[in-house]
Length: 500
Image 1 (cartoon, rainbow, N blue to C red):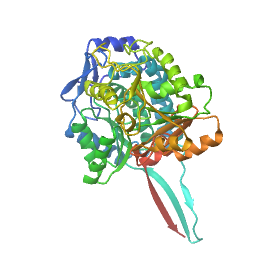
Image 2 (cartoon, one colour):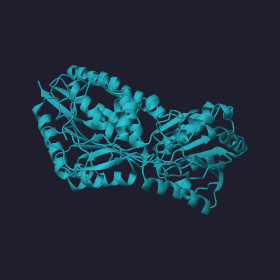
Image 3 (tube, rainbow, N blue to C red):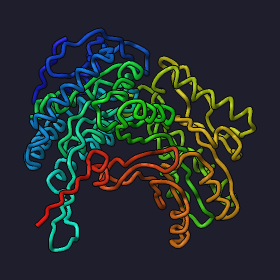
Image 4 (cartoon, rainbow, N blue to C red):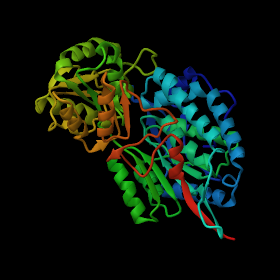
């Protein structure tokens, strides 16, 4: 299939939905001189219908992409541009993405089962902000001069690592593309993007638009396909210098193995989470924070690595909080993601649905008390899990320890600050946490004590594009996304020593 020509103005979401109904959507490799090969069907998680085709890439596809990326990097077509020139091209890309906002939001909605309102109001605005932020930052990075004696001059420079593999998750397709690709491109790397096989459509469109804006085709290549057939060869490729991966901890471990088995490429992992929300007895009026608690637990159907899936609440406030949560949860409407009123869409696929729904039975069998939800409605293709709350969850239960990645909230009561912090840290993960208290001294003590990369106080937040995002323990490895810190994973440090 030939690459479609991008237009200046994107199409409407209704047009995308119609193309999906006709199974006309497509994503495949974008590599200079490459002709696409065999495809597989991609499906709408809501109704199970085929919405189009995705190229089923393989090791040969990855080889072609890496060869093109390396050739472009060594030729300096992108890497040797002045930072201000790269900035200008990335800003043109941003302008094209703005024009295609509704189209990209609709692609993520139909491809990933994400509510359209969430795509339009959160995912795409943050995607656009990310591209623009790194474009503007690209010509504002400075080296250093080290102190030496009068007989030498020592310069410490940062330079592009070379060829970067960006392996994306399925839960935030467009946004995670921007988190990886924007900083890697901004400093002059060539990038090979591998989107999740379930959600490749927006990555295909975004890459087309980047080429239209002036990013050389070899500086930004796309490969699509299954993890075993495209992700693994990318991780093992001896001519890839960095792989930045977001996804499960189990797959993250594989990329560390791939590095050890090949060229010891740098590996950056952003993996799972089991984030606590800690509500102390002196928390502000609970009615003012209940929406933050619900968003932390159920935003994006709980398919979110920073999901606040453990609610640790002081025993004196638990009954009041549960009452407020149950009263507000009917507003979290399940339904067709194309409906602007929908807040909870389906699980991404049957395998994941079976995993998440399995925790409903496990929690009951282990003695947790179901206080809200617990059903799997037979709407659409049957991949829905109702927003669910279990009380009486102790630290030995699966729901306390394991990442569910679905809309199930585990409630655990505590009596003292020391107990709350012990429970918060009683996890293999350390990505995020939220603390609710009116005492600034307690907030500071708790924030310092909790072993997590992102701690929000009296709110649920992952920060902004200006703040680094990543985790401790099994939640992360090797670097951070977002902020100026994201550049570090895509740069090498070089010392230049001049003798006078």
